[in-house]
Amino acid sequence: MQKVLIKIFEEVFIHQLSKKNLWVSGLAQIKIRTLTMSDYESIIELWMRSGLPFKQNGRDSKTMMEKHMTAFPELFIGAFKATKFVGVIIGSYDGRMKGWINRLAVDPTFRREGIGSKLIHELEKTLHKLGTEVFCALVEAPNKKSLLLFKKMGYEIHENIFYISKRQKVDF
Ligand SMILES: CC(C)(COP(=O)(O)OP(=O)(O)OC[C@H]1O[C@@H](n2cnc3c(N)ncnc32)[C@H](O)[C@@H]1OP(=O)(O)O)[C@@H](O)C(=O)NCCC(=O)NCCS
Image (tube, rainbow, N blue to C red; front, top):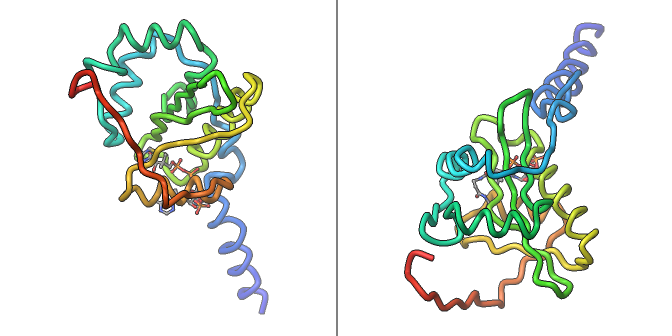
């Protein structure tokens, strides 16, 4: 009986908590800070490793990022585990009531530890301070894990909306 109880304790508390990396240190180890242009190369590297597209002649060029960062430095947020850069998220604000969540990526080695959720939560707080009442994101159709993440964080998925765009250049 005692052995069975110990087994249950191990499974429920130790295994589950360490799986979530919450045991002893876990998520508390994750430090959040705003990013600067000195993080540019690390940001690009993390996006590429995470399978996100890199628009080097458009929004992801050094010039464009610097422009956006100068206007909204608080909307570039990074997650760090010790000194390792493990997650990134970028916000944008349309000047009305909508705040956009863009380019979220978590290092593949550190996924399912709550880092993506933490980054979204931090960005929501920042966007809210800017006057945003609606948080939105565009997620490509097959990205199930991203949809599940947003759903878990209380986001509504709109299946009857089309994304429409017109580009001045193809690679923008
Ligand atoms: C999507 C992504 C940011 C999630 O980051 P993460 O740190 O692993 O997310 P979290 O640990 O905060 O996950 C929170 C919840 O999201 C859901 N989720 C996340 N990844 C999942 C997966 N692979 N399978 C199923 N559910 C998943 C789960 O509900 C999870 O809660 P749980 O672990 O308690 O079950 C990460 O997988 C990633 O960087 N993917 C590649 C880039 C990308 O697609 N970015 C989003 C562009 S819109």
